Length: 499
Ligand code: 4AD
Ligand code: MG
Image (cartoon, rainbow, N blue to C red):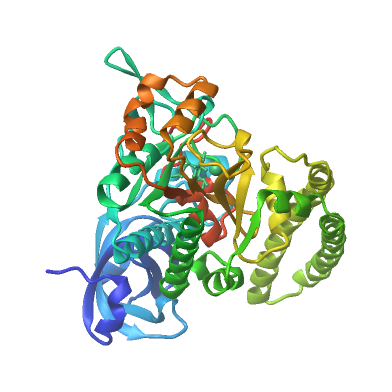
């Protein structure tokens, strides 16, 4: 017998089917059990009526608890008010396992608790939706590159050399030799591009990030194209096209998930259609230090204060109404009070942050790297991604080509709108053997481990470029998730190795 999935119930209207899944929620009255069943593809309301099933089946269904597993057979009935648009009117229920008391209930849990139970939390609607979007993003990236003739190739995870600075290296013992977990596949990607022209790697990368921020993982997935004969301009065009393609695909195919995530998609729609903003690092610094930015932050603080007053007042009003309200209205009020509470927390956090942001933006010194808050403040002014180019060479990696002044690196970072920060880092690569040798000496790197890399400049060196897209930051932005910990099934970060 084949399994019918909730996703495809539309193909079975008025037919009898068997679903296999888990109880997401259960409500019972005397003569009816309402089982909300999930099967991995979606949710379906199943109605078990005492009149439609045997006494034993009705009794057994009444003992089901959250996350119990079951098989349920019944007729598929179209009902627009139901989740997914279809209901199942059950004729039989087979219990597979009665679950123990499930730790994650519809009431609110703290994040630490949910992270401890990540293996179970993944079953919840929002987490489910985020993983579906993640999958769609991955597939869209492959579709984009394969469609343009890129070859996917894999770079090693054990490496003998650092590429993105020594401070974030994970060191391991490789049969009495030092090995590092790859921070990037780039250097290998360059070798592969010289063999195949257009390639991309897509794999796990590792950074011993000691910082506990909402943007940092110690293990994350990076997608890195590398293109022979591409300059910085072509590199930017490619990255912009790719992000547009990814965002368009998610908008087109994952509306249901974006709704579950309560994502306001207006900025995503603009990203899919409008040209990205491009500016140099120096222009970005000027913008950051400008009176305009300071004024914008003042405005932001003011509007947060106003909103705070408004929703606090609203909360008082509906609290008064609560006592005499009908049951459905009470539920509505409870929900609204919860939402207002969450929003107030956010507002308080913004109000605490704004003075520091303003200070940091105003006093920003040319030559420094942007901090998380600088990126946020800069991006408040744009509703499409911004590509920042021509960075002070000192703060960028040794392999980046420099402009004619020798002071600026031909790097490009792409900052996501809505405060999500850098999602892409890339550059045109230095293609001169002599210059690269100089850099390696200047930075005191062990030349012997880079000899193979230097060979790429000895044997048919060509201008080339590439970039790395951080998958989890991209998922966080597209899903509108506050923290990267919800963008990967089992996040690894400072203080988090289990489950
Ligand atoms: O800017 P990064 O360090 O660039 C590189 O590694 C280049 N070698 C890529 C290349 O040119 N092929 O990292 C690229 C992206 C960042 O923009 C960010 O999205 C993500 O990887 N990233 C992280 N994501 C989560 N946690 C971390 N600790 C991250 N560090 C970088
Ligand atoms: Mg970077």
